[in-house]
Length: 248
Image 1 (cartoon, rainbow, N blue to C red):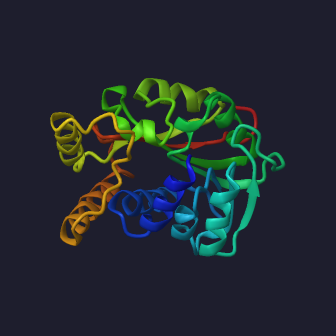
Image 2: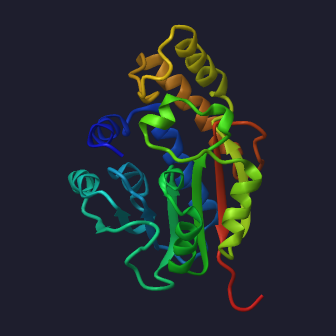
């Protein structure tokens, strides 16, 4: 990711609806599915500028890794976490080091996503939890993906196979950002109609406060439902998967 995109993320991620909703969802899934006892040792794999780490404060011992030193420098401005500069395809951690691994909107950037998920499974302790989120559906591909240097978007079946192929047992697989999907589609349709599609810019735009709060409220409704139901539509796919204990 370009430094300019990292700076924009750092500026927006504490208040922008997408980031706020996504991090509340990750925290809720950890509290729902992570094995006790608490506190947990948690790794944010591909931690970016640290917004997710900040949202997980209070859940345990927080660690982050990212391939970008610039991103890690921004993390250090947010909090005093244990950070490592490494790729998620070759993480510099011992086997079975963490109770939880979180990876949010990272795998779509990675050349070898099979190896990356395998690494996440490797560093999980038996009984440990992976929470992973990725962009869904190639029909939603836009200049937003190109600006963020995405390599792919995922379909439900392929994402399930990716996670299970690492030896993890799927506990939850759902789409997300369903209630806000009409707004996303309208915005992208507007850009196509007005000829602005193809300018390689992200969909991160400053919204009026009431609209931003409305979208956060819609995501909060989804986040309350997701631990109990699987949503049929959305712009993202979210998985919670567990590393088996012993030989099963």
